[in-house]
Image (cartoon, rainbow, N blue to C red; front, side, top):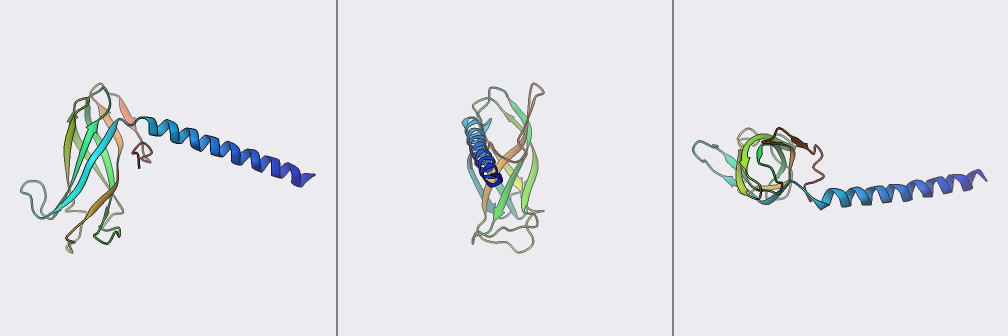
Length: 150
């Protein structure tokens, strides 16, 4: 008798968890205030921007408000697909002025992230904004990157 109650409770919990996950996934994937349209790394010096390498990230503002600034995060991988750099996740504050519907290119120096041993090719992945500040003073936050659309 006790075993039957445990099975029923377990089944109800599992069913509820599946429904919850499915509804969260649906609601979070429906809309994101931005889209990352392109991402790549350039190795070499770019005067005034970086000495070793830079991350280039193209972002589209999907919202109806101007994005003033934000916190962007990403992971950096070497040409073999292994995580690289001095940090697992690179996070940077970026000043933006992206009007609704517009696209802009963000360039982030990787000089402090990479060591002296440079690879010929790096890849960015899991690019996401964790925070966006809008011109009207509102703030959008997504610390886990669930709206990134991976």
